[in-house]
Image (tube, rainbow, N blue to C red; front, top):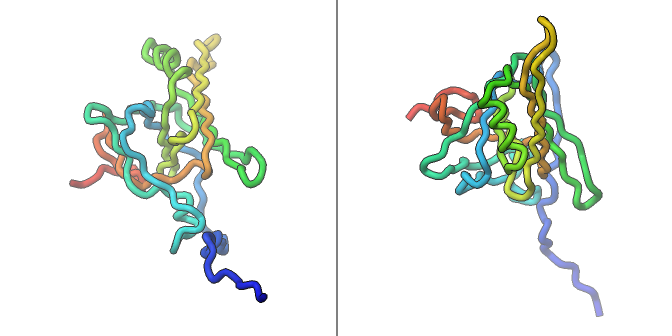
Length: 206
């Protein structure tokens, strides 16, 4: 009896591998801008979504980009943390074993000063599950934190020494995710800057 070959599979589309090109003369500006936004995960009532590699018409760029908007509770907004200029970075590394590999996304940032508010943030953030939005130099926002895994916040600081060292509150963040710090082009409803675009950082025009 002949064995019939299945005509369809659950992974018919496969992974959307394509070329990674770079144009000569193209500029890549490193670093992050001078503020990040954050909120407690419990404030988020609806999350944007990431596509699956086997989804129809998915691309490499779409795999790393959230679709939709974060929705917060009616009385909540994204809070701002000002950062020291040219002192901050987002990194990621692979962790785990196939087929369960994930990424460990990391943010290191420095807030100028050690005022009461900064100390208070440190005291609650180290035991809270938070989500952070970090802006690249080109205006695009990246996300650290997601529904599946807890975000780890490790604050530390220094009052400085002598007359030349900085007094600062440093924030180290670790968040496991399936994408290296996913892009978020949706709206960000902030407490300090109104509604801004996650694609550009500019105000959203009603």
